[in-house]
Image 1 (cartoon, rainbow, N blue to C red):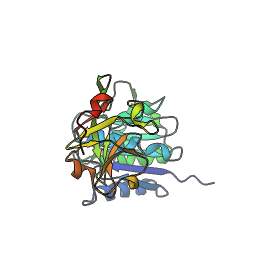
Image 2 (cartoon, one colour):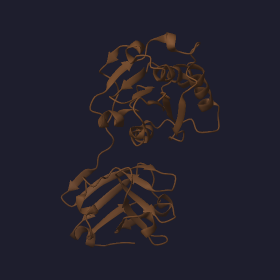
Image 3 (cartoon, helix red, strand yellow):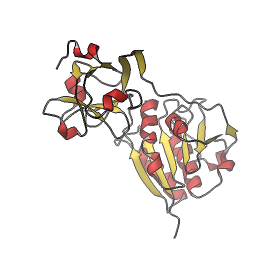
Image 4 (cartoon, rainbow, N blue to C red):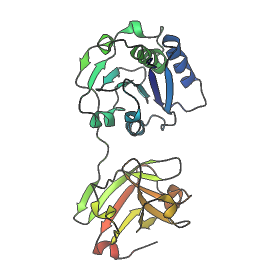
Length: 276
């Protein structure tokens, strides 16, 4: 069976400008048989954590040898490095600003190289559009099966960060944060079943989740199980607790957004002063 290389794009470029189209043109000029897949171009502008979350939730569903291009690059044109990170199955081409951090945490083995082989770049290189002039052509040559060793030397001091973790206030209280607000207004928190097992136990009661103006006392299995206007908790597909509403925007109903605190209170403390 013929090999059809796959290149994915994840950026904060949106859809109103020529940026994504120019990247695709560069790629197809080098490897016309490539399949280019848009994962997302609506990453929050300049938001490296949002980019890291986005690619971490999608990359592993692609076939072996896929090349993932991840561009959230507020430091474009500065001394930040372009890098090529390779796992056992995939290549990732990105700026060295931490946007691959959650990929690093999921993969057992990663080899990261500083991309320095300028003969693979589109010339002249713009100081403001490395996605077109560096990342797109490098991805194309990788898809064309140029050996990763040829793009630059391996580095070990690449930029990485940990996503915010929930913190235990005491034995009955856990404090987390909203990581993002999705397209439907759901608040995606950083709280997992491992952080709060009592919350996700079958038939769980005796808890409240406080976020924004609301106190939530129900965990549902599906968005549609919520009553109209009711704000509920649900374990979302990303593996995190989400604050949601059935056919409504929980962000609007709670008045909360990215970065807002989420508190989980268990036991007697939760029973005292329950709200709506």
